[in-house]
Length: 156
Image 1 (cartoon, rainbow, N blue to C red):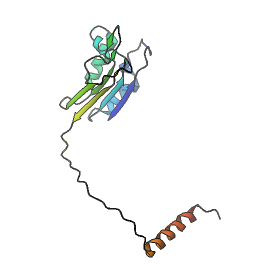
Image 2 (image 1 turned 180 degrees about the horizontal axis):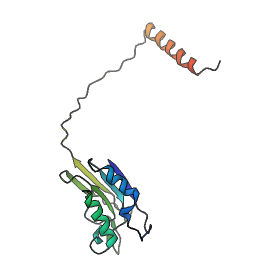
Image 3 (image 1 turned 45 degrees about the vertical axis):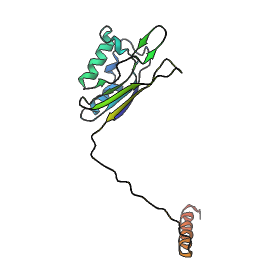
Image 4 (image 1 turned 120 degrees about the horizontal axis):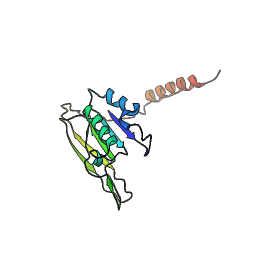
């Protein structure tokens, strides 16, 4: 399950973001399923130890076994570097690689995640060859089907 999250800056600062139903529903629904929470949380995870709401947010996510996949700044300006974009994964034993994609278009850097799965299912591709037959029997069959379909839409 993949959930995309965005938190608008300054949105109800007095209440902690992690208590909102918007986030609680995905957390409880994904308790026994592989899930990802991705997006702009607008909480600087680099300040989790010094800013109580961010620390509480991170602790609440970790109580549902969600861990942040990104650990470096994702918004960089001349005066600051913050970690506000992230992907949280609730699979502790999963192997994954995360990345911050450098782009000089904006000071907001996109993040990516590559998850390795141990899926044993193999999908065998079958080579299909599509042919159209233009013999008289195929043409008659096409015309009959076409008339039946057109008849369904005719108003009498």
